[in-house]
Image 1 (tube, rainbow, N blue to C red):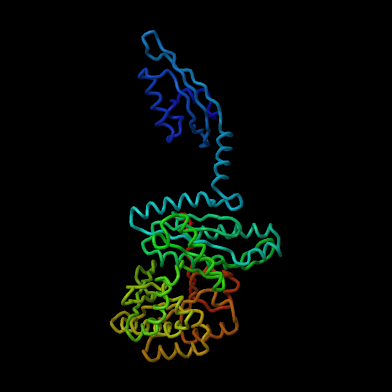
Image 2: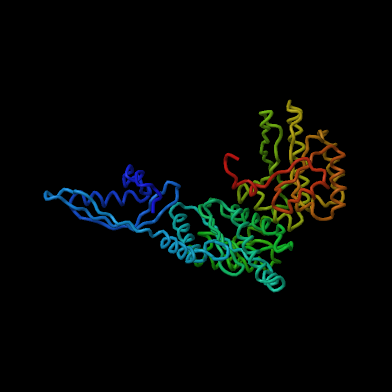
Length: 458
């Protein structure tokens, strides 16, 4: 059973053969025998074989005592129950996990949500609940067959797991619906929105299945504990309400739960209105994330990151207002302000004795497709006398996938000025190296989802 030769087994104590996690119970029973409280015991335990394989066994031990009551020796019967335990584990997993994807099922998700809510109530934190539904999945099933549909569900399940933190739970609720529980949040709106957007991007990546390239999208509804409910049932229900809002608003988006004319709805409207005046009122500010060169052991540049110092809501991250800016058309003046401000501030550092310091600025899709963008950038650089080789423009790969010839012309215009070009979040879109050969790109910024699961020593 254990894989030892007789002479090896005789040199080992029973404690050395026992799995460490089962040893305490075994020792406790043994001590009861030695204290004359019992004459034997039975238990299920695990043994470690020399090759590291676990063996489950049912062990029955009885002692034979001398006339004075002291233990003379033990008689032990060991029965291999590994197959039974493995079968029980398979049954247990089937009871709590989805057979198709291997994800937790609705029952297990509800249990983990209850635990997350209890912990958040105790620690005064928040919990985010996301319901993710594939758009037009029935059409895929009907046209390509259930086999392809099942493959897509497995692929989406794998992608969802790459979008969340280690302590989060991704489950399949049934059909084409998934759920995500985000425990221990301190800023649920921003955190949930960021993960929801990551999911939208990941699901939208093309998927090669059964020699076909599929393009999928999803809609996401979000509820937050304690604002939108204090129990698992109410949080799931309200996330479902938000999911239907997302579908009503054209699919391929996320929506938070709104209760009538809620604070969130008014907040979004207020943010849109006040965003129109944020530049003039000097409420926008740039933060700079340094870029460290490991070869030079020095900071060689920084990425400009916008924040909004809102008088009512405090310091807002881009996740709170950039989607609003894109929907309302304010992204163009906002993007121009970021570019001008980054050139102005880094230009000041150049003049103060830090020449050659680069600054990276993100361009949105609407900005990039402006017909006069190259001229606009040239004018901004000329007005400040900024060294064009110190400006790096960052684009997402999805921006480059359309209007190829126009894109190439714009990129060549930037390169003629001496600018550096970077593709941000590489790996969340098409990720085709052959496609990249068409574009004069200097830098690839690998998306975190590509490397987050690599071993630390890699």
